[in-house]
Image (tube, rainbow, N blue to C red; front, side, top):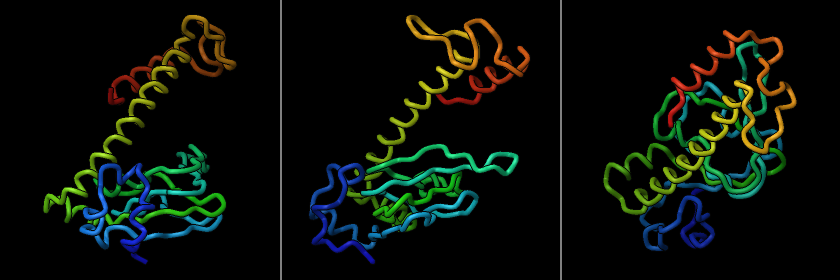
Length: 195
């Protein structure tokens, strides 16, 4: 169902920061409230889709299938978060599976309607796009920090005052990995990561 305008005050600020009540009325049909039950899939890895999801309440699990076919749990997120925004903006296949853990309440954001309103220069949707970019920038900054920590761990550098990683001692190669493998991984991370 489409989220009624009377519920506009409950629109989460994560996505609707700066969008006033009148602007929310102008973007009718963009969002609809959905409830996912425990284990239900919001997004399936590999599927194509242009819709995004703003999880307002509840917990979701992000999963990715590795090269051997094993499902890896990347994260569990409790509370407000935006998911599927890459599919909404870039199109293409979904990069991970997202499942509800318990009951999850979300707003489904129509990617097709979002793109139309952006092309029309709708101010409310442009504000929403800015809010999405802010979320993406924060995620990228966090991932940059994680990538650098991984590189330091691989190289055996733990930083001032930090303890050596549990899997390796400072200055030692990671068990089961030759120094060429570690160097190759480090170069791949540095070459392909966006800073």
